[in-house]
Image 1 (cartoon, rainbow, N blue to C red):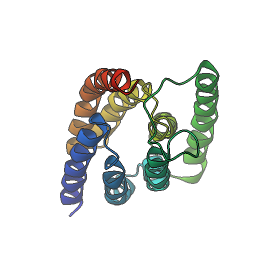
Image 2 (image 1 turned 45 degrees about the horizontal axis):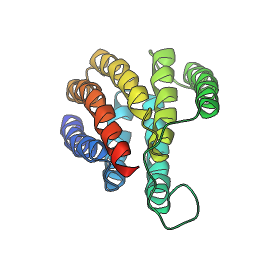
Image 3 (image 1 turned 30 degrees about the vertical axis):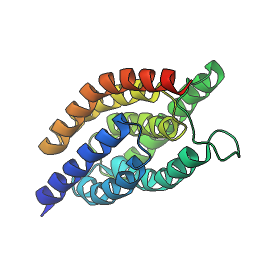
Image 4 (image 1 turned 60 degrees about the vertical axis):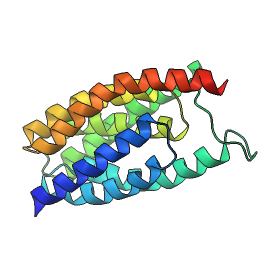
Length: 189
């Protein structure tokens, strides 16, 4: 049953990735289904930070859908792809650093995780990346590329082979996604 759920999560993940690549607002629908599946998969694998991050993904999916529909201000325009500002970038690095420490320490002291610091690393970066996606910043592809490569290694270590392959594919698509979003951003201007 666990492997069947992992395969189903992988299929939904591929759909999600295609929708994200296309900058389709419907990626947020897949962004609700996939975390619901992976809550179970990651918990069973002892990846507690990844379990918790999927709760965050469910919440940010609602915000992301709303933000993409609403736009940057309260006007009725759709949110456009943009660059993150230097100030926002510094804030994201600081947020990542704090989250890395908090998540890793929580895993060390509250769970039996054997990959606490590494799982904290991927989870903290994922929180930042998902917020950047919700705000439609093109640099989210860079963050996701790093997360995907690191996560693939973590999932291989934990025996989640289908998920590891999915994340290797995510890393490759992150390169193409960045280029695609550059073109879309230029077209929007």
